[in-house]
Length: 259
Image 1: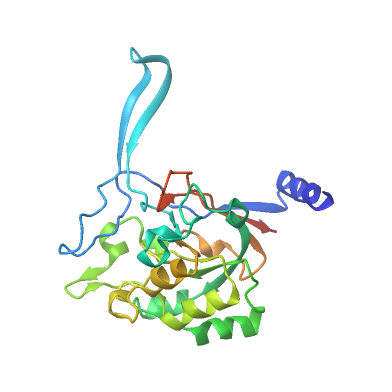
Image 2: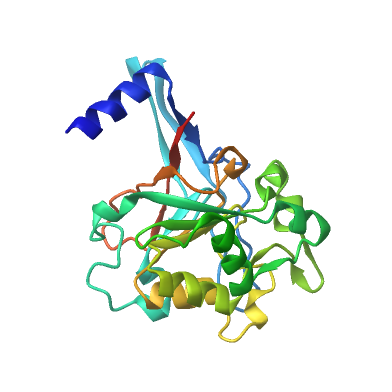
């Protein structure tokens, strides 16, 4: 209780800063594009007015929305991927909420990504980070800072696709294997998805999705402002909507950072 009192005091005094890690969600939000032979893409986000202090509602304004579960800054639940489809607590309405508030480890790859948009974080890269900042704690989030969120204003720049497909940074197979071994609750990136743009050619394909959800872990995509977090010491709060049998959800991800 004393710790909670200190937390409350820190929030009120500004000694603990609340950092917004979410991108704006609206009609211009970049969305993932699938190969045409695979599936229908998520439709563009739509915001429709119900009333705005008018004859349909003289004292109130509200809207209805059309959007996919995996739009904008979003949470991937285990049942999002075939490898996680059988977990009893694998949907957004059944997952343990205790895991939604956790320490966060931020691995800064922004310099490498500035040189190579296809940069891949390996297990050796994670171990090098651990050698400097300490081992990833069990139950923590691991997120990859790339500063890719700065491209979010343009879908073309954010997806960064050409005739060979999208080009964006992400993890290797052994990177995800290591953070699962460490007991991380999940993995997050500033890109459109949790995998690298070229991850379809890896073995297994899309290892972040494949291996995270196989082990009942979570994913976060399209995060923003990870450059405002320390490598260790912040607390990440990320709560998906309680969608019945939901495979994911847009989120307002925030972090608590001591200043």
